Amino acid sequence: MALCAKENVMFNECVNRYCRQRGDSCFASLSSLVSRLSSVLLISLFLALPAFSAQSSFDLMERANALYRSGKFKQAILLYRKAEDRGADPVAVSFNIANSYYQMDKYPEAAAAYRKAVDYSEGNFAPALFNMASVYFRLKQFPECIAVYHRALKLDPDNISGWLYLGEAYSKTGDKVGALRAIENAYRLDKNDVSIVYQLSEANIALNDFDRAVAVIREGYTLHPEESDFLVYLGDVYRLNKNFEESANAYREALSVKIDDTQIMYKLADVLVEDKKPYIAMEILNNILQIKPDFSDAAIFMGNLAYDAKFYDRAEYAYELAAKNGNAEAVFGFKNMAYDAHAQKRTEESVRLLKLALKYYPNDASLIADLLEMQSGN
Image (spheres, rainbow, N blue to C red):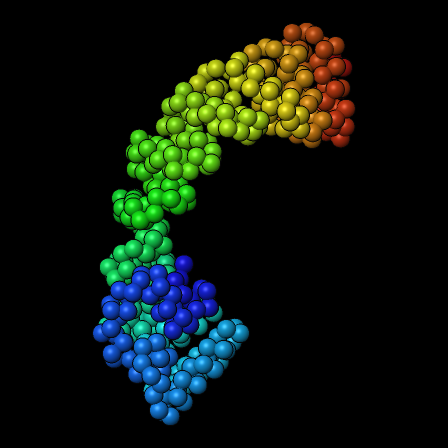
């Protein structure tokens, strides 16, 4: 979640990246900060190289940076502090020390060092603020995290990741409205990011605004017609809102793109059952098994529906297909059918069904016991 620490980015590299992202105006916005920096590490971005004493601090910073990149963070911290003693810029030193602590998962120490970088820059160095917010998040200090993200986003309001992380922090506090507003800002900045479409939809669903969630998904699908998963997700959202008919329509629309996708077909069958259309669902499940006979969950599903509808031949076929593919739930299907036959005084049928089950599960003690009981005539 950290802006620069997580990627082993040093202070000068982080400044360069930050400014490239924001454009030429970034250098103007940092001019007041730059005018007060004494370290060659940052001044070299704007001015000529100073004399011997600054060169010495520069060498120390370079050696510290090399240690950092090689994962020797403790040694890097020692050299960063020596560099500061010899005149290196305190913003750069504090930022790089904070990154080092971050890499060692020493988050309280990282937070303290980022605070120093923020204070030394008079709050004008956004990367330090973003990283400090990230540390607060890892420390589960979510109110502090949110406050720092707001400070950072005032400096860099076009930082999409910042808005998304802010939304996540709001979610951790249970503030669904705050989360929605943050993600809306990210969406406003980049409507082409598929992941943001999903996040914004989820944020609206959390507030039970299903109409807005559907609108966002539809807009995302319009921008990305190749993303047929949007249609599947749309079906899920409709189903969550108990709008089963629209859910089925969305799954069917997805199947018009992915014709033989058995997972989407399974979702369609499931929602048809919820919409009290079990016979249509059985046909969908039968189609699944024609395409993918080893889809044992679909076989169990069809077996249960057929059993409830008293289509025993179809139920037996489905349970046996599931058993062939190792689905243990088939045992319960066979047992239920055997118990029904026994209750109807059809002992031979009940024995046949249990023997059929034992063919696939020969070591199932419960099946053996039931078979012995029924054969004994009890």
